[in-house]
Structures are given as C-alpha cells and as structure tokens.
Length: 138
Image (cartoon, rainbow, N blue to C red; front, top):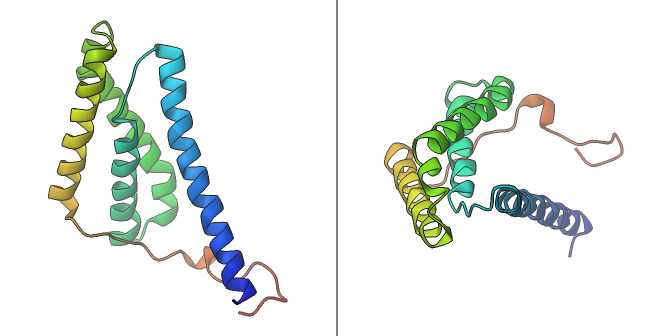
C-alpha cells in the first residue's frame, strides 16, 4: 500500500473523529448545562453544511461563507430555541426526546426538499489546493 494513501486515510479518520467529537461534545454540553436532551443538535450541522455549499459553490464566496454561515446557523438555532424548544424545558425527558427527534426529522426532510437527496460538494479554493511542503510531489 502506498504510504501517501495510508497517511491520507489516517488524516481523514482524524478529521471525521473530530467532527464526531464536536457533535458529541455539543450534545453532552447541552445536556450537562441545561439538563435538556436535544437530538436536533446535529441537524443544525446539516443546515450549516448545505448553506455553506450553497454560498461557496453557487456564488463562489468560500471565505465569506466561513464567517456568514455560522452566524446564520446561530440565528436559526436561537429561533428554534425561542419558538419550539422552550416549551419542552419543563416537560421532562420523556417529551424532550421525541420532540427534538421529530424536529430533527423535519429539518432533514426540509433539507432534502430544498437541496435534493443527492450529496453535493464544493471545490477547494486556490489557497487550500496543493501541497504543504516543497519536497512533496505536486
């Protein structure tokens, strides 16, 4: 097996592990601080990914998307919290789990309706293309 392929797979595993860590850390932080089970937490990552793809891919605004999309997701998250989740705080975990799981399903299906059921990608900007060192194969 080629050593560069092995290194690339190792780095991909590290990146995916960090994404899983961020999702799990967000869930445990919300549960630990607020004693609230929010299964729709990961759906906001989904919305952010597709908003980023839309902004960076269709308009070519990769760098502004890195700043604007998290702000948009923060606003969407606050709106969801104010409009829906506050009603579930006092209801207990028996109602929080199906309520937030249902919200996650609604978000996923809305994303499918808006962006379609197929995966999408964005080309890396010129600054992030290529090798990091001059001795590596380009």
